[in-house]
Image 1 (cartoon, rainbow, N blue to C red):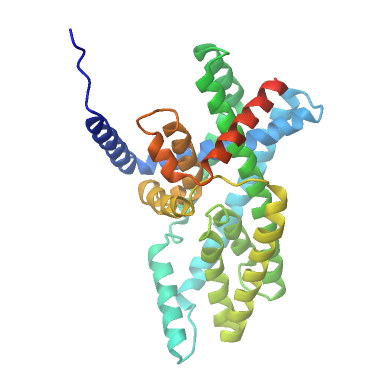
Image 2 (image 1 turned 90 degrees about the horizontal axis):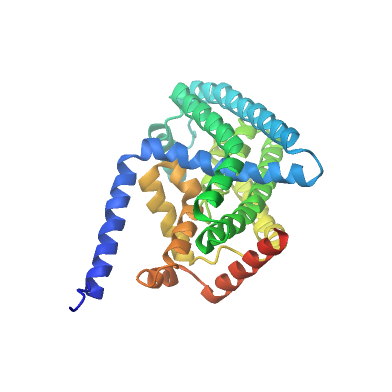
Length: 340
């Protein structure tokens, strides 16, 4: 008896249909999934700090205690700072405008009104509540991660190739984003210091904003520069806005052209267009959190698509330097095996 086989073009159509259904499902559950995915991303980054403490000779119990206490203290401090600063910002916003008759000032005031009307900074209680949820979800997940890894190994088997590839992918991705955290920290400190010297209102807030938006490739630093540039314009005129804008360009050039390349030897092996488009796709699906985690989510999808003959062509379209990426992944897997 001849075995029925689905035509190849129908397989591709089925795959597209499933992807479309999944995207719609994610969109309708974005209010729940967004914070959850963000907490998973934060917990994975924090877990690397936990392992760093353990490698320095501390016991696991002491390492997990110091990590969880540190995360709680830092998270509480950030949320408290945001609550106080946003309250002051909401109080000052109605009176904030650029007094000038030039057409550039008119456009700047339109941008200010757009920011005020589209960014929900006034709903401070909701922002803080969401932050509290992400903080505690991150703490609980950091505590559970070692057990989750053990359960996965027990469930799939120690020699499961797919599981080893998944661990290697997560490890490679985390190495990249740990470096990104360090670079963004330099960004945030540098921006806050410069804005403080120029007596720009809410200097620390704009530095914190720069830190988080630095995770958004190509657009993040540009978006982070808009509020302080507008504040400088309102306070010092167009000359002050130009000066702050130039300082942002200088910091961005130094960090991205010199510091970041020295810290990392390879990128994410993703097409520039895919990186750019994924930000908007995940931002539309998950909301603001999608912009922050869009790149790692896209990277995970690419690596998943590479595992199947029917979808490997999609992965090839989304990568740049595919052979190098494959080689790097194999090297990382070999290193992990040697370390184990």
